[in-house]
Length: 113
Length: 114
Image (cartoon, rainbow over all chains, first blue to last red; front, side, top):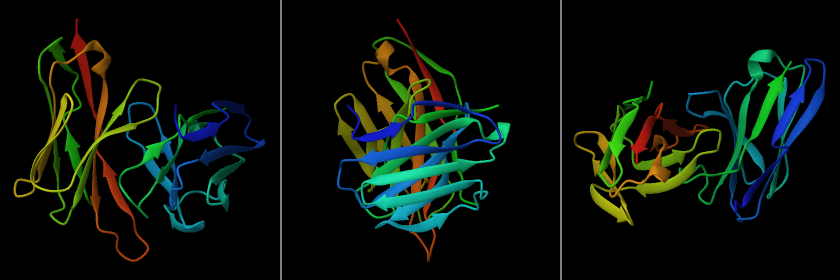
């Protein structure tokens, strides 16, 4: 059983929709991450939250908007996405601030029509 | 540009054999090294971390690190069909101001043949 939970597991949305991906970790970790992964590619870092503050934004388009309501929750708000944004979106957490031992959730597979 | 190189494979080994997965990295300042396993359609799972030169063993897995050669490897003994997955090497360099550097390789696809 994973201790990083992501919902929904699958999401299909149109280019004009607004939706959100949610992540919750029950590990007491200090850092939380959003990654994007396309097929047959490694994960690409999007955002890092450290102690509930956005510490890293890897020049992600503004149609992706992260939010960290508290130390256990991480959201990714989606608006006006493009078909090329279709991917597996992975949430991860780590005990060490900006650590390398990442614990990933199962991911949310997003399809943009 | 920090680089982590892996042979994309596929690497095919017979069941019961030793699978050897290799990774090289470009930044000599790298300090921490990780192996993640990713089954098709699933998320990555951390299986090994190594921080100092030498070998680190955990069950059937052994990670090997040689910082002088900028080389890290993963050995899987007694390979099982359930080990068939893509293995991602990840390398972390010390963060600078406002930066976070965990670089993933492109992954090696391992296929264990029954």
